[in-house]
Amino acid sequence: MTVTERGAAMPENGLGRREMLGAAGVAACGLALAGCGTGDAQTQPSLKGKVIAKTADVPVGGGKVIEDLKIVVTQPAQGVYKAFSAICTHKGCAVSTPKDNVIRCACHGSEFAADSGNATKGPATAPLAAFQVKAEGDGIVIV
Ligand code: FES
Image (cartoon, rainbow, N blue to C red; front, side, top):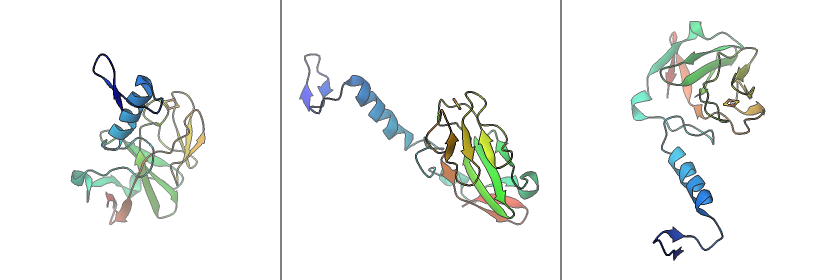
C-alpha cells in the first residue's frame, strides 16, 4: 500500500479507486440484512423465531413476497418451505410473487429457482440470499 500525493492510500496490486470502492461495497454487503446474493443471508437476531408467513398463504410451486421484510417465501415441494431475499441480485428491484417454482424479477427479466434461489436466467447471475426457515404449526418461522 502506498500513499498518493493527496494522502489517499492506494494498493500496490494495480487496483484503482473504482475497484477499491467495489471491494468496499462487497464488504458492506456482509452487514446487510438480506445480504447481497452471495450466499446465506445474515439473519438479524430480531428475525429469529419470527413467523413471517402462514403456510396457507404459500402454495406449492408458488410463494409469497413479504414486502416489509423484503423476503420471498416459497414452497417448491409439498411441505418444503424456503425463504430468500426478495431483492434481485441484478440491480436491486423487488422480485414478484413466485409462480411455477420460478421467482421472477420484472425489471429486466431475471429468474431464480424457487428451491435454491439460484439465478436461472439473466441478467442476474448471483443467487438470492437464503434464509433458514421451518414450518411450525400454521406458520413459517425464521430459524
Ligand atoms: S433488477 Fe432484477 S433483473 Fe434487473
